[in-house]
Amino acid sequence: MPYNPALVAPMRAEVTRLGARELTTAAEVDAALGDQRGTMLVFVNSVCGCAAGNARPALTQALKHSVVPQNVVTVFAGQDLDAVARARQYFGEYQPSSPSMALFRDGEVVHFVHRHQIEGRPPQAIAGDLTAAFDRFCGAAV
Amino acid sequence: MTVVVETGGALTYVGRYDREDDQGVHLLDVGVHDAGSGAPKESYIERSSRYGVRAEHRHLTVGANEVVRITQLGRWEPTLPR
Image 1: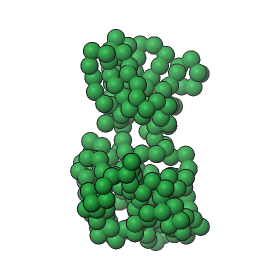
Image 2 (image 1 turned 30 degrees about the vertical axis):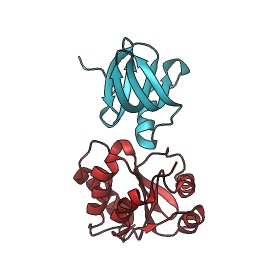
Image 3 (image 1 turned 180 degrees about the vertical axis):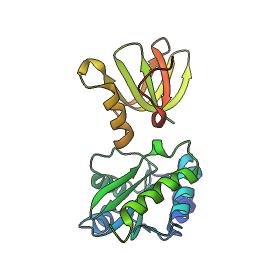
Image 4 (image 1 turned 90 degrees about the vertical axis):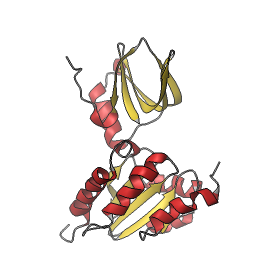
């Protein structure tokens, strides 16, 4: 059952204020992820503690990096059920977890951050992994 | 916390640590590797780390007397410490 929208609103805002576009329906996910060109980060948001303490702060830090994906979108697990289910179809063999982050380049997942790579790790470490992936896959020379 | 629970038998479990009590270790969203399947345990754990855990059980308890080692998935190493 989805969470109370009022409860999750601040959690959504913490991501959208970074410039991430929120996808709340399967159609919006298809429009964003189907036939992609360039680079895109999909942030799977969640109400859990490691999203609040680790994943969202890490995303905030990582998006201040000099090299970032061309687009950042977000879906909310446990809330926008159809959108999350559809987004996961684009993740291929990467198993569902939340929070998580998928970096796409030209429609392919090139880097994935699972929940187990978020929980128990400081935001700085997670952001470091993300920015290394940004440098590798989102730079002008790639 | 996602952990690898190794046992003295053929089965290894990967899942989210829930709690531990007299019954054993309670895990959520659990994948299971059976050494009898022929696939190496190391490959299974490395694949779980890279692609995530393919959950076969929503909840599973590993008996306390079966558990040999519990390791955080990201810190798992193939050899048991001496």
